[in-house]
Image (tube, rainbow, N blue to C red; front, side):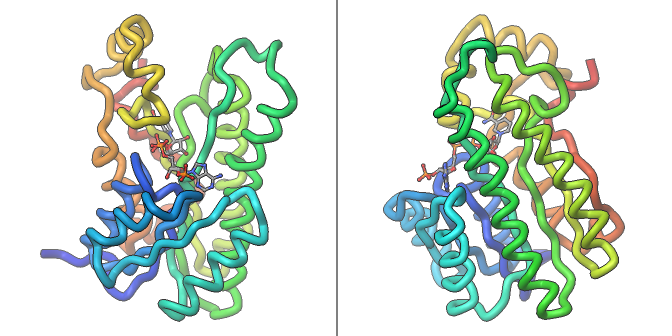
Length: 250
Ligand SMILES: NC(=O)c1ccc[n+]([C@@H]2O[C@H](COP(=O)([O-])OP(=O)(O)OC[C@H]3O[C@@H](n4cnc5c(N)ncnc54)[C@H](OP(=O)(O)O)[C@@H]3O)[C@@H](O)[C@H]2O)c1
C-alpha cells in the first residue's frame, strides 16, 4: 500500500464527523499522524479510537484563539511537529434571505468559518516558518463561495473569503515552501447538509445540475485533500479544486 503521508503530522478541524472525519481517516491510512479537532470531545474520541496511536483528539472551538493555541500546544506535545492543516470546521446557523440575517448569526458564521480558518492557518504557518519546514494548508470552502448562494448568502460570503485567503496566503508563504490550496465541495451528504439533502425539491434541483447525477459522500472529498496535502501536488498552490460532481460546469 502506498503511504503518501508517511512521517507527516496533520491537524484536521471538524474531524468528528462528515467530511473532516473522512479526511482524517484517509490521511491516517496514508501514514500520517492526525490531530482531530472539534468542540465535542466524545465524538472525536470515537474517531480517534478507530485510528489507534496515529490519532490524538483535542477539543477546540476554532473561533477562539486561546483554543487554537492550546490545539497547537497539544499537537506539538504529542507529535513534536505539524506539517499539514485541514481547515474544515464550519457553521451555517442561518438559512434564509440575506436581507433578514441577524447580527448574531452573521458574527457566528464569520467567527468560525473565517476567523477560525485564519487563526488555525496562521498558527500552523508560524510553526512551519519557525522550523524552516515546508508544509501544506488545505481549506475546505464550498462551491457556494464561487456563485450566488440564495438563502445561504452569509455562509457563501465566508466561503468566498476563504478562497481569497487561500490565494493571498499561497502568494505570501510560497517563497518559504508552504503551499495553500482549497477544496470546494458540491452537495455532500452530512449532518451539515441534511436540511438540503432531505428536501426533495432542493435535492432534485442540485442533482439535475450535477453531471455525475448524485450527491457526494464524505469519502468522495477525502482523496482531494490527501492529494493536496501530499508531495504529488508539490507544484500546486493558491488553487481551489472543485469536487462537485460537475455541478459548477453547467
Ligand atoms: N456538506 C456539504 O454539502 C458541504 C458542501 C460544501 C462545503 N462543505 C464544507 O465542508 C466542511 C465540513 O462540513 P460537513 O458537511 O462535514 O459538516 P458536519 O458533518 O456538520 O461536521 C462539522 C464538523 O465541524 C465541527 N465544528 C463545528 N463548529 C465548530 C467549531 N466552532 N469549532 C470546531 N469544530 C467545529 C463539528 O463538531 P462539533 O459540533 O463537535 O464542534 C463537526 O466535527 C465545512 O467547511 C462545510 O462548509 C460542506
